[in-house]
Image (tube, rainbow over all chains, first blue to last red; front, side):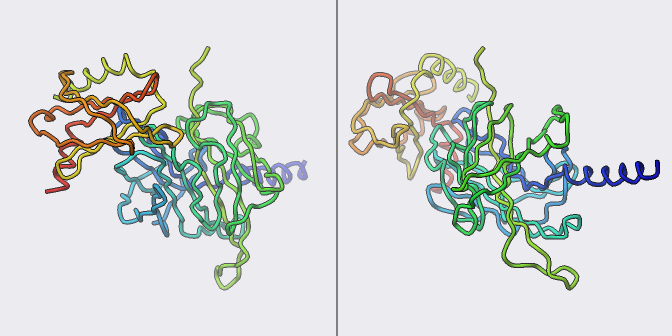
Length: 256
Length: 113
């Protein structure tokens, strides 16, 4: 009996933390802004467990910028403080001056995760198409780690696959592990097993991974690797997890 | 004013929204309307017909697309007060439009002041 209780308590502790994958998030109001939609896109930046809608504090990022037609602009100073999932985050209404793909990217401050005894830095990005022009949809930003899209990262039907290459320090990562999680925005999705809150796929020898989304909405892909360097916490050298995160929107299939 | 333009757009949209391969964009710079076009493949159309309409669907002018896929014309503040619809047709099924809204025009005018 005693053994059962101990085991149950241990299991609860494990599942209570294992199901919670951390995600940096940049969620635009629209991934494909048409001229009828207006001339701007609203961006919401946060740090959370997106399936459980469990928010965490997003400190002021190290950087936040946009890349369009090969030119990168700093937007850090334009961010407005906001509350996202009951925790501090940021928002920005960004004017879209021209057609094409806008890539928004954030480097957060290192987050100390005591449960994992390591720091976490999730380089997070998302792609927004403006006015029907998708040029630049496969742009590689040259982030320290990133997922470079092989499928257009917008305009996907639910059930389509999303494919990307995991890169670290500019090189593909063979067999990289990629966590996938749904932004359960209205809380309607439930998981029959905690294993299905965060799903995992592995990349092939060229760092290419594939995932088919079962429903429309925002899906986050996070490729996790460990940095060569360490960071100090209370006098001890700790590992640093580098995450390449991309948020991709899938659309409702409109056919019968 | 905005409602009128919206209704105007909806009527137009209902008849022309099937065309999709040509991308049209227009903006105002220093009192000039600049129209840019390209195909979704990235190629530039070398010729085409451009019609400029006001919010009452009256044709204000017709122009020829230049060989670089652009065309320009001076902005007439009086005729464009309620916005402009710029239609470009480059061939069968290859037509599209851009709406310069009153806000677009006001913003561009403010930026150059």
